[in-house]
Length: 179
View 1 (cartoon, rainbow, N blue to C red):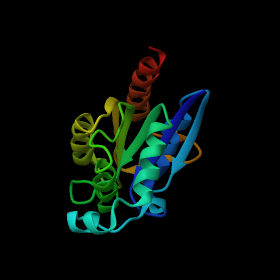
View 2: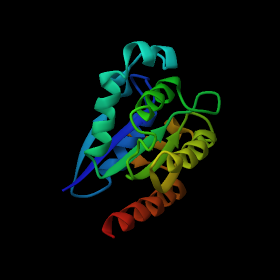
View 3: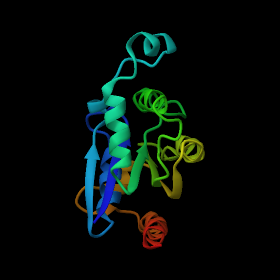
View 4: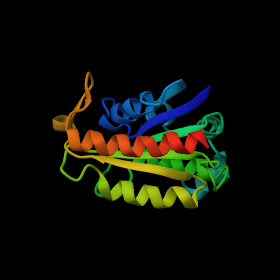
């Protein structure tokens, strides 16, 4: 059975990106989904001095093991000031000290959403490019603008054009997995 690791790249307890990641992962039939919360991977802020003195935290190793145990990553990027959240960047910084290619060759469905009209498009672009340098293969991307207006937990993506665009990207993921 296909194993999917899904998460929102945010430490918000009510993360809209976690909701979008969970929704997207659930659209892949016959898959076992592991939905994680970045709050469960909170570590001290990365620094070379801290690494030399204390080593790499076990939570970074746990996160790396989760990546390696799954066949597909569904990541929805939250955007803070046009970039990664501190919580996600810190997790990347620590985990990349274990192995620079931290995504371990896994295919990634990269998403983003925000309350605003751009839907986290800036961070989605940055994260999609960076993922390749860090050993991931972004097979599809999707940005959902105005989350509260365009998404319902019960119905999914409400806007028909956005729903069609999401479906197109999801089909890319499914085609990649079928190879």
